[in-house]
Image (cartoon, rainbow over all chains, first blue to last red; front, side, top):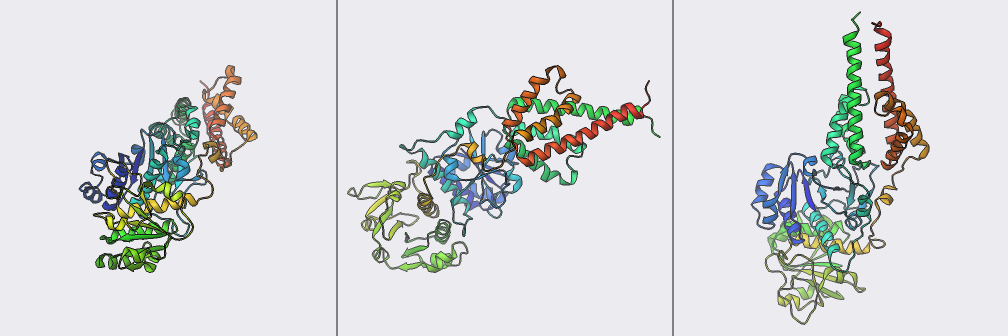
Amino acid sequence: MRIVLVRPRNPLNIGAAARAMANFGLDDLALVEPYTTAWETARSARAGAKVLRHARVYPGLAEALADCALAVGTTDGAARSPELPLETWPQVAAALPAGRTALIFGSEKTGLSVEDLSHCHRLARIPTLAGAPSMNLGQAVAVCAYELRRQALPGRPRARAWAEALGEAKLIGSPERERLLNAWYPLLEQLGAIQAVHRTSQTRALRAMLLRWRLTPADERRLLGLARQLRHTLAGRRSAEAGRCPPG
Amino acid sequence: MRIVLVRPRNPLNIGAAARAMANFGLDDLALVEPYTTAWETARSARAGAKVLRHARVYPGLAEALADCALAVGTTDGAARSPELPLETWPQVAAALPAGRTALIFGSEKTGLSVEDLSHCHRLARIPTLAGAPSMNLGQAVAVCAYELRRQALPGRPRARAWAEALGEAKLIGSPERERLLNAWYPLLEQLGAIQAVHRTSQTRALRAMLLRWRLTPADERRLLGLARQLRHTLAGRRSAEAGRCPPG
């Protein structure tokens, strides 16, 4: 299990997250675009020192998730896409697949953005009260790490439903998905299916869609092949219009 | 459930405890001999403000427990009397009696003293790792409050198959899938992505792929729109080649 903190602002929270991870036996901490001061200050914290020493900093969420089989975003549900169901963390934790899972927490002020959420396979909510949904970041990490440890205690058989479901087929990961996006984006723009002015939101929607589709390596090959053929065809069209036909 | 903090030193921890209580629906906070500065500073905290406003200060643990039917002390087990068995907090929380229960946390530095522990009916340990047993006070309160809330959730948190979870999102059915195939097949053929001689097997493969992808109505609209734009573009190409450019 990798704990991913996206744009954390407060060094106390980074230190608290690391300490809670140590308490419950987690050691893989990833920071995405941390505020530099926060990160430098947190590194000097004593509690959870070993976790902090091995923590890695990534320039973006895609890079932090590159080697993860499953990405779970934590959210109170306000900003989520209607196409991804919102589950509770105990439910999600009870059915984790084999392979590395990333559990992702947003910044203290804003939580995860819709852009961040587009990288997530599943959305989990800590069952806080509706009247006071927002948790302190360090405490949220503590509660989630506790739940994992709790489920690993002897006498609680772990549900394997999700693992079995995922076991059906090997799925592509984050790097392959980004490669597909990069191959298709210019083509879709050229076809008029997406507009440059909406580039950010439409890339996000595309990513979320590809993620939901549970693409296999064979799907990836087909879609890359199709992009290649389409690129070739569109280039031929341009030369037909611009090259072979004399103007006027 | 009353949360009792004995001699807390750090205002941030008092504030964090109050916030976590609010998150999980607890509102009875008791402070035994808090450091005055810590308590005054904590009272100005915004998160968990209502809990802090109603918190009471007691001169000793006995007074804080006067109206409680059960007193549970939290400890890592180091200082406990051998006569009281040490249970895990999930075990204790699963079998709380009717009536008011106090859950007692010691100070950040020393935990509960043997004197404090002598006021407890039961001793509970949060299942941290042996190598890193000591939790931050605010996080310990958060984890315990979460466990109570978790046990109060309707039914036992159960693993849901991914399919069932996704079932909340509406998926397209067979007619919509066939419509998509009919829109895309001629385009893929024109692009050279599939060959007419393999029409049957390749349509089957395409259909199976669309089915695996679990498309939503929004996906269907996107893919139909893209097919329309592609058809338009390819038709333009044909007219560019065949119509506007004179042969030979």
